[in-house]
Every structure is written in structure tokens, then in C-alpha cells.
Image 1 (cartoon, one colour):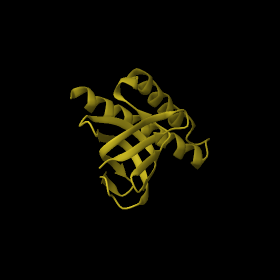
Image 2 (image 1 turned 30 degrees about the vertical axis):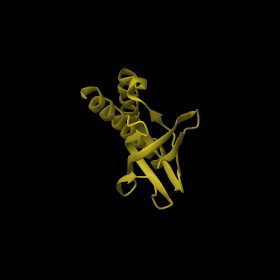
Image 3 (image 1 turned 90 degrees about the horizontal axis):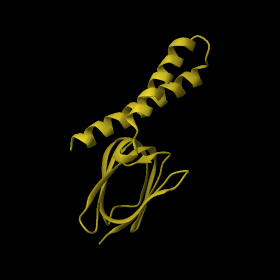
Image 4 (image 1 turned 120 degrees about the vertical axis):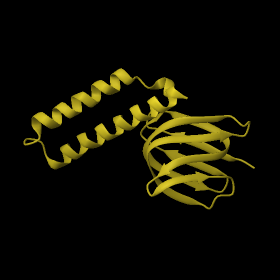
Length: 139
């Protein structure tokens, strides 16, 4: 028995595969989805998503939050970011973090609370991508 798993971002279908398990960070903790799982819709946090194909191959992606829906034998994740380790440019990410941190330091008294919260979220997401990449490259 397998799940038909699809990951969709605004730019592409990042994954479409038959899988025997999905492990990810949900909004309230880690979650594992197996065939026969109860139908759910769950918010997903920034972090690593691992899955095992029906051929037994285990793979991983960085997911930038979103929503997971499991219905019957189908699982679909809608997210703004789905990256394999090879797609991550750590130099570019470190530059983006530095730029966002500089913007926070230099304009903290000028920008709105919403803009400040947005910059903090950008920094947190980029740091999570760097952490994912560092862990994957050590394996």
C-alpha cells in the first residue's frame, strides 16, 4: 500500500511520487504519515521533510512551511519553498541573512511592526535552510 504524494510550490511541482512514509515538522510537532493515515489538514513548519518511495529509497527536502492534506491514498503539500540540498546556495543565503539583519538594525525605529516581523521571519527561514543544508552535507 502506498500514498500518492505531491508537493506544490508557486513555481513548480517539486515532487510527485508514490511513497510508503512521510516525516515532517507540523505546527504542533513532528508528524509521520503512513498509508491508511486518517484524513487531515495540518499546518507545516519550516524544516526537513523526509519520505520513502515504494522502491525503498529515502529522500529529503527542505520545506518552508505550508499546509499538508491527507485524503485517502493521497497526500498533498502546498508550500512556498521545497528545496533539495543540491539546490541550496549557502553563499546567497548567508548574504540574504546579512542584508535582512542590516535592514533590521538600521531601520528598526522607521519600519512598521509588520515589516519588522516579516524581516524576522525571512531571517528565521533562511537560518533553517542553512541548518538543513549543513546537516545534509555532513551525511
